[in-house]
Image 1 (tube, rainbow, N blue to C red):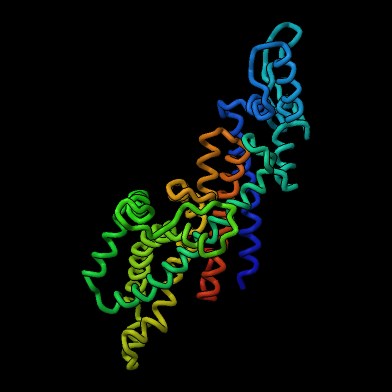
Image 2 (image 1 turned 120 degrees about the vertical axis):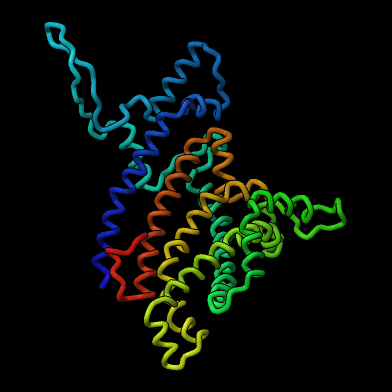
Amino acid sequence: MHQKYYIKRLLYLIPHWFFIILIIFLLSKASHRDAVAAKLRQSGIEEDGSLRYQQLYEDQKIKLGFHLPYFYFSIQDAKTKSGFRYPKLAFHGRQCQFHQWMTGLLSGNLGNSYISNKPVGKIIWSALAWTIPIALAALLISILIAFPLARRLSQQSNKYVEGFLMTFYAIPTFWLATLILVFLTNDYYGIQVFDLSVKYGSASGFMNKFQRVLPMIICMIVADLAYLTGVYKTSILKENAKPYYNTALAKGMSKAAAIKKHTSKNALIAISTILVGAIPSALAGSVILETIFNIPGIGRVLYLAVQQGDQPVLYAIVLLIGIFTSLAYLLGDILIARINPKADLATTEL
């Protein structure tokens, strides 16, 4: 029923991705960082103003393809024999920087880091191996707690529980992370709950890695729990105001049974896009937590890339987040169709 809609949305994403790639490419060219000089510094060649350095600079520029025009066409200044100047559209075909960059992306070649000289793809996948399990674990635990709690609160409001949740929701995530780091990861106060000293490449087993990422998971759960509970509870209460809920009660069904069997399922439609959007949001928002807890995930890699001017890594991560976010909302449509096959996705608000 929804297959044509999925194909249409997927085809719509192609120009969307092209636009994202184009914007990131233009941002990379607008950067004040000199990519050629950075590449030479990586080889141990510092700028000294000599003729030798200028020659090496030009050779490296040609090697990177930065001597080519930016795009497939450009506007150049031209003049007639009489000296009248006018803008002229010049076409460059495939001999442009954007085409080379696109070719590299489509072939999976994202280039090498300016700092470590490692392939960008390898750096990103190694970082995602930390960030994605953390984000999924935090989201799953939040759902397992928030959904039953929201159904319970929709039956009978409890101001103490709701106040407790709002208190945690009001705590800034970076502040909670700092408190955990100060009080629970050292023995200054005779307490050491978490051990963050485990090295990234240590072969000490899963439990040491789990102990390393657990503080970050806790911070993400605290941030998501109250929000998911509140949104899901509101959605359930909206569904409870519809006639089918009163019909279920009139047939002798209890409030708890009517909510569990009917309204809680339909209420999932309203927050399905929130759930699927939580993972790309976690990728983009993990910068602070991964930096505080020194976790080598995508957020910390992004922070170091910005700090060190590592442009290939920086723009590859931004591109990944943009594409992943668009795919996440397509997944949201699929979830809506699974929850309610009668849903009209073409009119569903995202």
